[in-house]
Every structure is written in structure tokens, then in C-alpha cells.
Image (cartoon, rainbow, N blue to C red; front, side, top):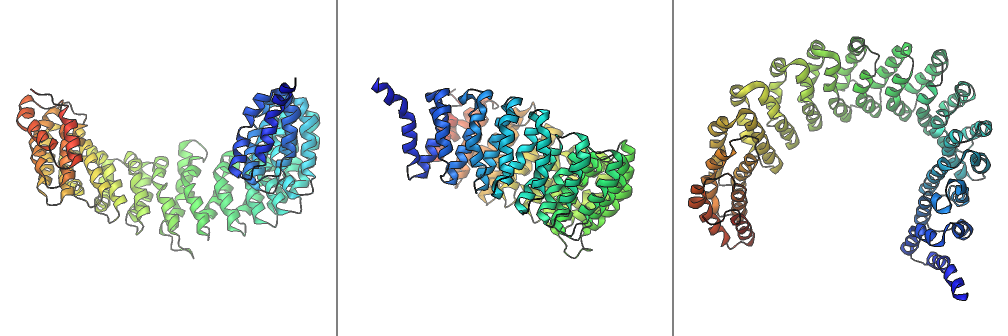
Length: 596
């Protein structure tokens, strides 16, 4: 009997000893093992011994408390299921009041998880008193944490508990501590989403307006998260008389951070409000894209396409609104010289999105209004701006057609193929196959082929690699004859270059061609075999081992004659090379060519 008693107390004793260890890592490890310990103890002893012990042990380092808060959220099955989940509330209540923010946040998330699992009757019996204690706590930490619990308790709890929850929240919104008001503002939208429309239109609309005029800009910017949930509960008349004036204040707030926050939400606002209010929201967006603060204009620019896409249907109406009310303001953003603080990131953000606008406004308006802006961006001093335009070339091509595209934008794009910034050259190369498929062999040979070939000798490896990949994709488009007549002679010339990197590029190009989708890859391999074998005596070891690897990949494509006369002699020579890497790859490739 005595042995049995010792065995039953052992897990708790061990845990106590480990939690007294001076090493934080050891204490963390012991907390991580809590589920295992709970399983060993069983449900009853976990409830009676382990949970009370943990409740009394919340005095540790923040890292340990964080792990404990996270672990407790997964403990519901270990204490007997949802009907016993209230056992976990006391330790989490304590953790929700500690000073460290990340610990409190983890505790609140665990409390929300547990509340979701609890039966409805237990919400009023256990969760509501917990919310009451935290909301009326002496320390701001508990009052800050509790704001996140109202929505889930309101949704899961019985109707009888809801009046008290609605009566407790205003005190948090009017708390003298700014941190509490910030938390209340941040979670107000989640709470409003759960409450009945009549309450949203009454006391919670008043709370929203109070927080929207708080003297702390950090409170005002967070209350923007409540706009859409509140708007969804208001009538059209209330939206017009009560909400729109507040939204106008957000767009004109003296703090640029509040205006930036509103700019982040304006697309959702446009989608949520009644369509009769669209002109007012458009006017606010116009104000934001011409804001004196660059950080606000950046957010507005990034929202451009989504905002225009959210304008009311039908598509013709959306197009007209965009052309009449948004496009005229883009020139200022593109040039960005009318502002007191020209901001390069504004143009970068606009360049990343403006070409997509072509899909909304159509062919004619794109040619008239957007193409001139594209040309300005393609010649911008900032490489990031040029790059963002190039990445979305296909959008414009699909709208205006390739003929107009080639006349208006092609010259600028060809010029960028020699751009000083390698990422711009890389982006151009990525679009070469698309351009080639549109203009055909003759035009491509005349206008763009030499640019791609020049990239094979670029000093940046990523460009050389992209050029090889691009040529392979164009060969797939134009076919074998074009490859044999136009591409391969230029590629083979690289074998004669003094710079070993260019000789290696020839090998890389041949490897890419081996991955072509053409059915006649064997003809390409036969054509490339001798030039590759010729390099097996190259002075540079890197070239020689790439020769060995390339020959190994040709094994299924070459005739017996080429294998016997050229490939095997070259690989056997390389197998005896003094460089271990060359020898290794040669021997690997030789295994692909059994003796004939």
C-alpha cells in the first residue's frame, strides 16, 4: 500500500522539483510535458491536484508562463471534457492579468477556445463572473485582456447573460487608462458583430462615436476595425446621418496614422455601405490618394484596384466611375511632385497595381489614360517602379491587344532589356516568351533575339540562367528548325569564349534544351554532342565536370555511333581526371553508357 501511495504522488512531486530548477530551459521542458503528466494522473487527479498546483504556481519567467497559457487551452479533454472545462478558468484568469503582453494574449486565446467548448449554462455560471472580475480589476492588464472575451461569451452564452455583458463594455471604452481604451476599441467590432441590431443602433453606436473622437490617436486608429461590423447593423438612414460624418472625420483626421488606418479599411467600407453612399466614399478615397502624408498615399495606392473593383455593378457603371472619379487623380500619384514630401514608395505601390486597372476600364480608356502613365513608370529612376510595371505587362496586353502594345510600350520594354538593374533585366526575360508568341519568328529575330543572346553573356548568373530558360521556352514555341538555324549557332559560339563562365553557359543552355517539350530532342542532342565533347579537355575543372554531367543527361537521345566515337572516349578521359569532382561525375555518367 505504501509503495502505491509513493507511485501516485510521484508525477506531481517530480513536476514541483522541475519547476524549482534554476534553469529556464528545464522549467520550459517540464511545462511542455504537462499533457503527458495529465494523462498519467488521470482526469480526477488532474482536476484535484494538477490544476490547483498550476494555479498556485503562476510566478515564473515570462517564457514559462507563455508556454503554460498555450498548453492550458488544449486541456479540455484532459479534465473530463466540456462539462468540466471551467476547472481551467482560474489559472488562465491569473495569466490574463500578468504584466507581459504576450502571456496575456496567449491566456486570452486559451480562454476563448475553452469558452467555445463549454455548454451554454456554464457561460453564465463561470465565464460571466470571470469577465466581471477582469473588467473591474484594479490593474489595467486585466481590463485590457477581458475585451477579447465579450464576443465569444455573448455568442455562446444564454440570452439572460447578455444584458450584463452589454452593460460592462462601456466602462472599458471610457476607462481612464489609454491602453484599456485601445483594447476596447480594437475588439469593439468583434463584439458588435455578435449583438442584435437594435443595440448596435443604440448604445454601441454611441460608444463607437465616443472612441472615434478619443484624444488618443492610437484609440482612433483602432476603432476603424469596428466600422464595417457596425455599418452592417445600421439602417441606410443611420448610415447616412450617423456613420458617414464619422467616416469623413477619419479621412481628415489630424493624425496621419488614423488616416492611414482608415485607408486600410476603405475598400471594406465601400463594400459594406449602401450603394447610395458610394459618391461620399469615393470623395474620401480621392482625399486619401492626395493626402499630404506619403504613408497614407502608399496605402491608398495599394488599395486602388480593389477599391475600383468594389465599385457597384454593372461593369459599365464601375468603369465609368473609375474613369471619371479615380483616373484623374492618378497622374499626381505617378509624378508625385505636387506633394511636400515626394515619396518613392508611393510610385512603387502604384506601379504594382495600376496595370491591373486596365482589366476594369477596357481598351479605349487604357490607351487614353493609362498607357502614358505606364511609359512614365517604365522610365522612372527607381528600379522597383520599373520592375513592378514589367511584372504586370500581360494584363495590358490582354486588354489593348498586341498591335497597340507593340507600338506604344514595346520600345520602352526593349530598352529595359539592357537596364542597369539586373532584376529589371530578369523580369524582361521572363516575359520574352509571351512577346515571342505574339510577334512571331521574323519580328522576334529582328527586334529581340540579339537581346536574349546578349543576356547569355551577362555578368549576373541569374540573368544567364534566365536567358537559357527563356530560349528553351521560345524554342518550344518556334520549333526545331528555328532552334537549329538561329539559336544553336549562337550558342555554340560561346564555346570559343575566353571567359569560362560563358563556356559553362553553353552547357547550361544545352541542358535546358534537353528539357524541351519538342518531340525532336534527339536531333538537338545529336547536334550538340560534338561541341560538348570538345570541351572535355577544357582548362577549367568546373567546365569539365559540367561536360560530364551534360553528357550523362544525353544518354537516351544519342545514336550508338556518337556514343562510341565521341561520348565514351570523352567520359573515360574525364574519369581519370586529376580533379575529384570531374572524375566523380564522369564515372556517374559512364554508368549511363554501357559498353557496346
